[in-house]
Length: 472
Image (cartoon, rainbow, N blue to C red; front, side, top):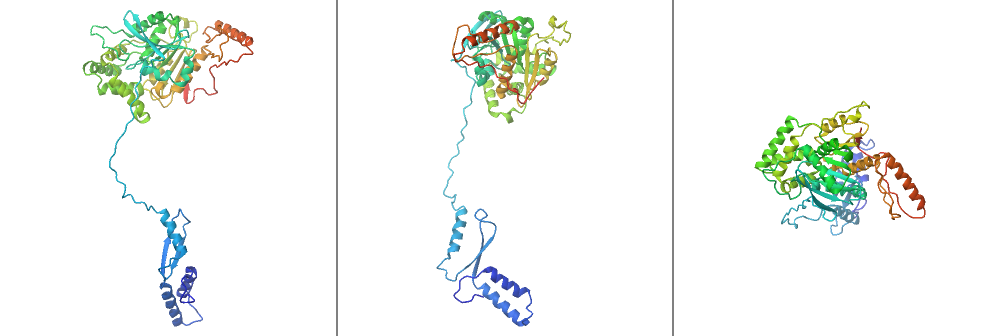
């Protein structure tokens, strides 16, 4: 019990200890009646003050219980209690949400990007062939070595290659090459519907049209870069005219004829395109053809771009003719020949080939089949992880592999900071003799210009150049 009646506070620990001892432990020195009386007195004296037990917020202090005994003088709040309450009130969400009124919800969607032609860097020309005219887009200096591209089904040079060749690593490469983008008949942007009596070229005839393209621009040879149907066309051209092709980069290339399942789906697509236009079934097949399955989960924005492109920018009648020509393709009739005495008989592609696919692409098995029919001494197969449309989903890995492939074939890019002489070499040809002459000429220029500042920026080789990829 407090010592005096005017006392306001008493330690709970001491008081609780006294109560505990008097009520639980028998006092042997006093009688039982006195012990009970003392216990009652202490209990009543302990219950007389008003006790408030609060638990402080764990964010303020530790998890200890704080007990304070409030004075009978209610007009005067103890300092400790006011500090405690202010701390507790500071941590509690005192701001009410009643004064906030939600009046309107407005959804804002970003505008879809569309593949558009870059008029500043690319110029287009019409090339006359024996099967009609072709639209060819030129990107770069025509005095540089040529890269010839060909697109896949449902695409053209804008939707298939423009984003890839505008990638930062490919821009450096374009300083030393000129790219000629070939569009299949009627597949260019805004192409008019082909006449009903027009006979669309077969895959072999489409390949022969490239001969007119090379002659129109005065090209003796070029590096082929094709995707899907375009890769098949470039392969046919390389088989017939191996002297016109220096190297091939083939993406999702199919070397066999169409199977029954593919033939059935494509014939159904052709029928829908001619009668109803771009239906949902055709759209789903095109998305599967380019991206494989599960594209919505891994790249939703890219899927929306190409869905909108197929629905709004593709001429369905012209696409039906191209698909019908592709599904009627014949086998390339190439076979791997390991006998060195028979390798010159032209049983397989004689030019260097890099065969690329994505791990999620539906054409992985087709590229494996093609790889088994190529000469292992001048070809390589590459599967890039976590992608189906490799040029859009993994442009960095493809560009690095393509640059290293070109370097392995003798193309050493030199970009001098200061132009020293007009005879400085920029790109080494593929011939070993000319490569030797090139190195001697480069050494001579370096000795003659020791006091000049110029940078020799060759393609860099890293210790592991193609990360997360399988090369065999």
